[in-house]
Image 1 (cartoon, helix red, strand yellow):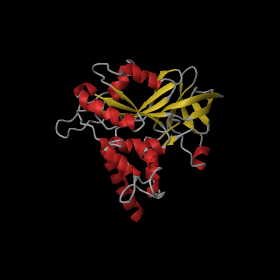
Image 2 (cartoon, helix red, strand yellow; image 1 turned 30 degrees about the vertical axis):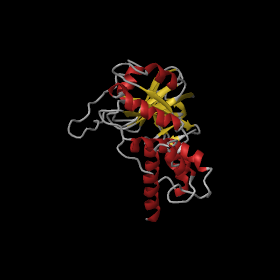
Image 3 (cartoon, helix red, strand yellow; image 1 turned 120 degrees about the vertical axis):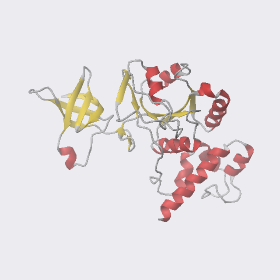
Length: 291
């Protein structure tokens, strides 16, 4: 028996990286009976067939984490890539990605890519999200800005790269490792949005114990995983911190009196844009619960 990690899955076949090589495997039928589907990132035990040297996945080890979109397991951190320009950054979408990462309890690094196109805007956003409690790296694949810092952040992690199409995820990964040679795409002149280039989910090996996953781009993310409106407060770091000082324990930081969160927004300690996105998400969750 060999141990390994699933790095790719295509058409019912799973490609498992072992200490020596990558082996094409099928999953045992018992997993279907257990309603368990092998995922990219799963750590597994496999048996090799003497006939054709392909493998069978015999056991899936317990997962430390699991994402639904993209469907991957054992991710240790999320790198959220947003372009400053071309396409212009959408902070509503950025906060949406952060919400998902916080819900999954992942370590998060925000990568402000194409930062050379507007350094002032990049610096302003960096300050906002660092104040909120996040690590922020300003990068440029073309000018090799921030690439070494990004490499250090990836070391000894299984990282998912998330962000909208056109943000430059594949270009950054090609700079991190020249051997990746991932397909990159231009931004559509008509829609000002990126064109999808990543077609499937695959773990790319950067170094020993270091993998990255270039996930397909997303245009929207569902928030129906949040069951109660009060949960949302916990996924905005600065709102969670200041909200402990609100007059009412049940304060949702909307229309309630003596709200410390609103007080800190007025003082500039909480970004107004972040707060307004929080209110938009709160209203969305209320509408979901209503129906």
